[in-house]
Length: 395
Ligand SMILES: Nc1ncnc2c1ncn2[C@@H]1O[C@H](COP(=O)(O)OP(=O)(O)OP(=O)(O)O)[C@@H](O)[C@H]1O
Ligand SMILES: O=C(O)[C@H](O)COP(=O)(O)O
Image (cartoon, rainbow, N blue to C red; front, side, top):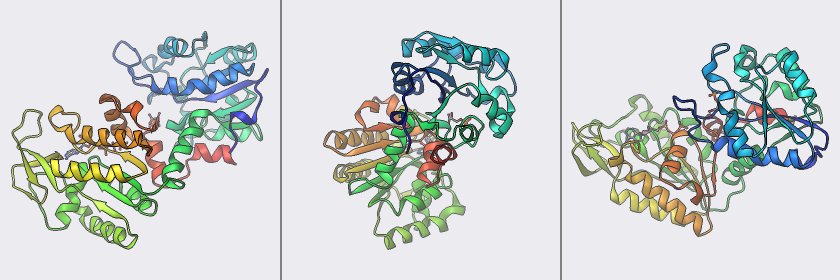
């Protein structure tokens, strides 16, 4: 696996694919700069080597040139985080960009305009990738969040850098963290999967059964398993067409000696709102008119015990409707347990959109071993797929 340490960037121009697809508010201010902060070590290492950096990224899903998706909105933030002047250009290919790249001095940083202003980016167009490739001497992919896309700047461009391409620090760290859980993790290995739907997690569950000793299935997903086993789940969310599959997963787990933990009780609400009436019920005895919205106290206790006994922990998906304060308790307690286990020496990885949002919101981000910067990329990695952006560097 080629990393930054395999190159000396002195007097070299590094063409770096970063994922600066960060959330902006209506004043175009960056509301979560994690992805920019995470790319800093790679950029600084190259500058300290005596090289220069050409940063390229997408922002959102624009249709053609749309000012609201311009990377100029984030240039000040990038400059503030890096502590280095950032030169911007109004395009990502073309004469002006080539001139700006060619005149870049060691120690300087150039930020290109949104790659997705060209449909050729997402189409993985070779001619577009070749134009990008002309800008730099060495290609560095540090965009884990976009590594599951076979786009021009994440994948295709790599073919023009034979022997001159590598992973950035962030991407290398993401790969290492996933490997720690999926391949080399100290046992017992635990995966906690939550979230709304079984259907979006099936491939992950099936892949992960070969890797873990314990699997907690929480959140909205659990009701499909409970109903499939004959439980009464009231109005809780359920995918009836996945009940067969749920039973099959339970069988597979038994055969593979994986212990599955499904909540035994829930906080049930009579309405999907923060101020609904609530009661604690056994998960398989929820009357009509009530729905399970969070893990109950007995379940939390069981989950705490499993977490504390585990040496490697993966967490993807909340245990309840954590966006509503009244139903965030189970997710918060799980976060507390994982933080405590991490303090005691376990390795913990949090990945996926909503679980990452939850750990940030509740202040656990620096109490776990690693928080992934990838949403879809993380989920596809857990499905066991080799991401195209990663494969292109390994080639
Ligand atoms: N019991 C429940 N009933 C209804 N919704 C639930 C329940 N438990 C969790 N959820 C909802 O599931 C949603 C998260 O599910 P989802 O599968 O999208 O998340 P994720 O796995 O964290 O992230 P990703 O976006 O990466 O898939 C949250 O919005 C949460 O409110
Ligand atoms: O935020 C993300 O998941 C990545 O930046 C990829 O964005 P995309 O889903 O628009 O390709």
